[in-house]
Length: 232
Image (cartoon, rainbow, N blue to C red; front, side, top):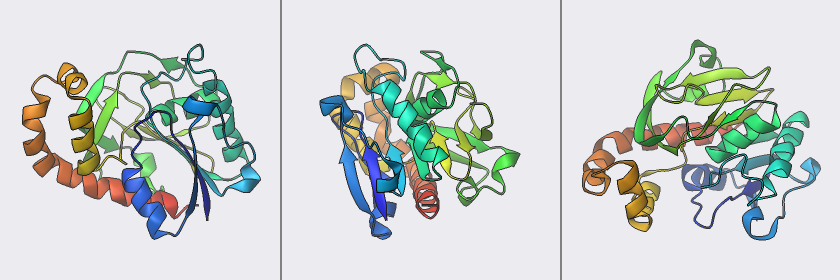
């Protein structure tokens, strides 16, 4: 199993997705286009493509000129029948690549928030792995319209389009299901000013939230990661 992983920022945790890929014995090739512009360019060389989040917007082409090419790459992998996963920024880029509109700054969410499955998720091979409603970590301010032909799988109170699928196994997930409690703890330590700005009192409240909502989020995140890897 050969998997191309695109990181969009200096600090990128593979988290639960990394756990599931390791369990499956995947050979992972990491791309860091924010540093060198390099992207996977041939779907025949990989069985799947995973694109993680980042602080940039999906339309930030001036500062990150590779973004348009990455959106096209995600679509090309999907059209070739490869499994594709976009998380947070990755989901926004997938939406862009498939013709949706990106809306910047209109849907800020931070922390463990509830996501609800839609009826369309009942038979989906990935989203059906989690309960009808579950807490999961969010850290974003942007959202997108549903791409033409996409199946809307999950929604939330702030960002309506939380998860969608195109074709066999191209999944866009706005929420950070890869972010287990260890990842969130590292983000809290690494970016205390940013987390406090987004959620005043976060640093003090984080341990208690991790012990409650974080436990359920970890279980949901690992279930989603394993279910996606099973589609590769």
